[in-house]
Length: 420
Image (tube, rainbow, N blue to C red):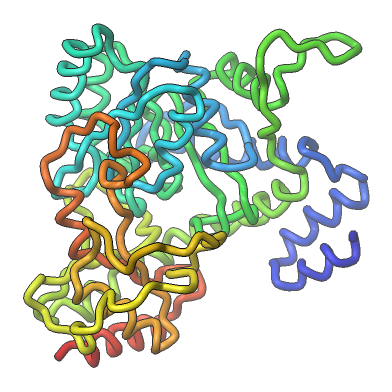
C-alpha cells in the first residue's frame, strides 16, 4: 500500500512529496499529526492577512470535507431539529444538505444580478417573514461565494448583526477571494473552505472551518474528533463526528500552500484573457467583478449566452438522456428518467456544451438553484427570478492551473466556430 501511494506522488511537486514521505517515515498515517497542525497554521497565516490593514486573528480547523465544515459550523451555531437556516439558493447542494442532516429546514434566498450571490434585500425580507410565520428567527445565514465571486458581505453582516443571527460564510469556491482587501470566510462567525480536487488548492479532498477564536476552534475540533472527553478511556457526553483531516492529505495541502498565490494569479489571468478574446463576440458575455470592493479568485470563469444566439446542433439539444458524467461530475451512477426537467439551461447553452465536449473541452452549466431541486420542493424560498434566469443562460469555462493561454485561445476559437 505504501509503495502504491508513493508512486502516485510522481505527479506532485517535490514539496508535497516531501511532506507526505515524512508522514510515512514518522508513521503519522492518521487523521491528526504534524502536517495537520502545519497546514492549519499556513491557512491561518493566509486568511488573516488583510491588504493594507492589521492582520486578523482567526483560527482554522482542517477537516475531511467542506461539507463537514458546513455541518460543524451549524452545530456550533446551535442548529437543531425544527430550526430554520437561511441559505443562498444559487449554489451547490453542499451548502444546504448539512442543514437537513440536523433535521432543520433550509430557507432559500435568491441572488442579486451583479454578483449572482445572496440578495441582501431578499435576505431581510426572508428574516422578517420567517419571524412572522415561524414565530422565531432563523438560527444562521449562509451566503455563498459562487464561482469565487464575493458576496455583499458588508450589507449581509449589517443585517445579520441587527437581527443577531450568526453568519456562516460558504467560501468553498472563494479561497483567496477578497472583499475590500479581506479574505472571504473571515467576516462571519465561521467560514467554510474546500480543498476538493477541483478547487484553488487541493488536498485530494478535504476542507476547513475558519473560526473566530481559539475557544470556537477547540469546540469544533471536539465535535470533529467524536466528541471524546478527557478520560483515559473513551467517554462521550455528546454526539461527535469523524471529520478531522488525515496527516497525508494535510501534507499535500502544505505543499499546495506554497503555490496558492500563483494559482490565484493564474485564474485571474485566464479570466482576463477570456474577457479580451470574447469582448467582440456578439451574444457571449463574461461575468466580471461587479464592484471596486470585489476581488474574485475566478475559481471558474463563467459566461452567459444571449437566448437569441444560435449554436450549431441546437435543434438536437436534450433529445436523448445523458448516459455518462457531465463536466467531470464524479459518482453519477443514478440514471435519469427523462432527458428534460422543468428548469434547465436553454437549448443553445446545452448545444455549446456539446460542441465544446466534442472538442475535448470540459464545460458545464451553472449550478441549478436549490429552490428548483425536487428534493427541496417544499422548502421555503424567497425568489426574484435572478438565479433561474442565470441558470438558463450560463456556462462555466475551464480555468484551472494547467489551462494555458493557448488552451484559452483554442476554447474561444471553438466557441466562435460553434456559433451559426
